[in-house]
Amino acid sequence: MERFVLVHYHEIGLKKGNREYFENRLRLNISKTLEDCGVQKVRRLYGRLLVELSAEADMPEIRKRLGKVCGIAYFAEAWTCPRDLEEIERNAWSLIEGRTFSSFRIEARRADKRFPHTSTEINQRVGGYVKERTGARVDLENAELTCWIDIIEQFALIYVERLPGPGGLPVGSSGKVVVLLSGGIDSPVAAWKLIKRGCTAVLVHFHSFPYTNKESQEKAKQLGALLAEYQLCSKIYLVPFAEVQRHIMVETPIETRVILYRRYMMRIAEEIARREKARVLVTGDSVGQVASQTIENIDVISRAVQMPILRPLIGDDKVEIINVAQRIGTYEISIQPDQDCCSLFVPKHPETRARLPEIERSEARLDVAQAMKESIETAEVLLEYPAYARGTVRQL
Ligand code: ATP
Ligand code: MG
Image (cartoon, rainbow, N blue to C red; front, side, top):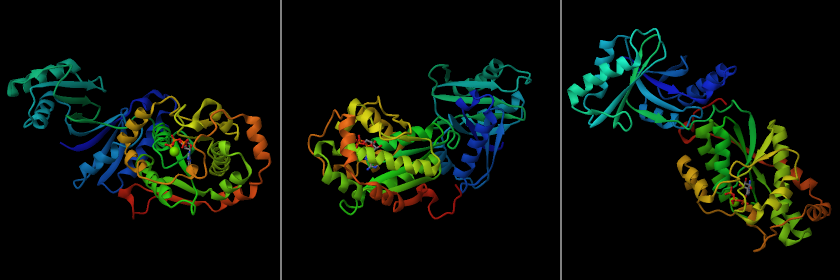
């Protein structure tokens, strides 16, 4: 028996014309992710991928990493065996033997219909064999142990444990976006959602150093590295924003400051997006969560730029966002204390119903073009890699 990791995707399978493109992208992403894990080749085969393992393959590490490769529905450590009922029965048993369970099911599937036995026949034959030796009952709904048998052209694949991937589409298959990344809980989740749908997310973080400390930048970098576990590598811009804020602060009514900060953030992010050839901006806004996120303010903030602003969390409750943040691993980083640039020089009761003409009048009095230009020119641009890849040279 030869050992592989079998990778299944679902949605890519639906993309008829582009199927090969998506499959190849996924194959490439898996190869890069597992580069140093003892993997030999990733092959495409019958609507699935087979990862060939060497004898030294680091299975625990491979499991951990594949769980974060977007586009994977599920994966399994699988063994091959010849396409022969007796062989299948014997090999399935060798995987099952020694495990404790009181109910089980066999789930055979023929990708190659030329195999002379139907799935039901395989299930009955192998199921009977297992039942006889273990006394366990067959349970098709809630089995404690499932043994999958896939018949493909070359051989049968047998496995007993399926692990979930993130689903979605392979990173790199859906274009580039610029995500405004604060150190908070929401925006990393927004970034992740776009990454999961196959986008490459360039991260833009605004900070007010030296008026605040460097904690928020540190957090943004850590979030970038964590998100790189899903998108291989994160490009991140750390943009100094204090000068722009200083201009806003001296010239405009205190209640509207947050809105003005946001509008200038959008403008700078839009310029970065143009340079990066990204087509849209992304934020972690959710309606009504904080004062800057009323419908009126979202409207006024959005009108600062031409580029569409995507807000993937717009209808989510905080608890739902926190659940995702915990699941993907960003939560622990986000809750570390920091000094957000927007908490600088802002009132207790900010404007919740901004009016565009008034905001535009305020902005007309400002002379921030130079400060904005400097923000962009002096931004620090970094590439963050997953913690496991640090120190190794990687290609984007
Ligand atoms: P988050 O948890 O993402 O910080 P929030 O609920 O705290 O969101 P706000 O602070 O009003 O809400 O921020 C709304 C959105 O504006 C954020 O989700 C993020 O996309 C963007 N944003 C806010 N502050 C920054 C920053 N310092 N740098 C980059 N983007 C920011
Ligand atoms: Mg915030």
